[in-house]
Image (tube, rainbow, N blue to C red):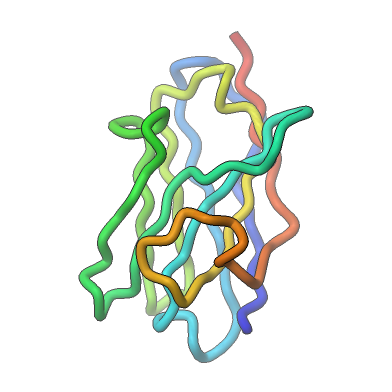
Length: 125
C-alpha cells in the first residue's frame, strides 16, 4: 500500500483559491485511482473528487457541491495528486484527506486505503 502525505491547506477567504497536494510513496501509485475526501467540523467524512489511473484515461468524478469549482489531477512522474480549489465557500471548511483505491469510479470511503493525516482548509466569510 501507498503512504500519502497531504499539504497545501490553510486559511483562505471566500471566493479565493487553494491547491492541495497529496504526495505518495511506493512503486504502485500509478496503478491506483486516487480520491479526495473531507470531514467538516462535527460531520462525517464525505467524498469530494476522484481520478482513475492513467490506463483508465484519468477520468474524474466530483461530488455535486464542488463541480465547476474544484479540479482533481495527477502527475504520475511525481507520485502526486492535486486538488485545485477555486471560488471556495465557507461550507468547504474541513480537513481534507487523500487516499487510494483499486476500484475505479468508487466514491465510498470504505473502498479506499492508504489514508493520509489530512490537511486543514478553513474558509472565512
